[in-house]
Image (tube, rainbow, N blue to C red; front, top):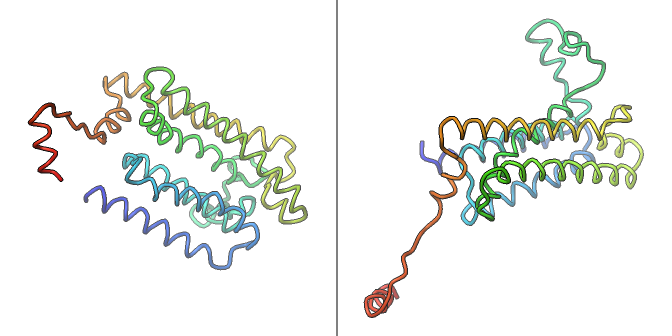
Length: 237
């Protein structure tokens, strides 16, 4: 399968899932709030596909994360019935096996935010700034941590503004006073795992795959000098 067909398949699968889960969500108001940033992110990827293309691996990571977020938006994060799904397969709930007393789907998605987005962010940094070495791994981690903090501030502001059940559903803290700090910590841990694994793989194979992808997308046009260059430019026109 060609790269273009693969990416179109990912887009079609995501849009199909999004459309199905847009029907009768648990809370329509919360669903709208949850989808604002999601749709902006998808639109940004479509608009920048030609000017700032990412690797197929990066688009796949983003696809998985967007799908997870779409599921959370449909049910609201604190109501995703993963325990019921797990029980239908195993006969017992995951919370019982792990000794959990709350819905942990939101924790999983925050962790996945760092785990799945750090690599695409690194590609963007390399493409835009040309950074190498330690900074090419540190800056994606740093950006993940800062944007995770920013999202928690957005959640807090939205919860205060809307208040009531909608504010509580969007915040999704489930009574945990340290919810924001734990979410940020998990996102940071996910990003740290990704950049460390990427660094180890690059060192082991002696290839920086993200940089090689970026370099492969650059188009080098040699400058023509003198009469030959003028003649060639005339023909191209």
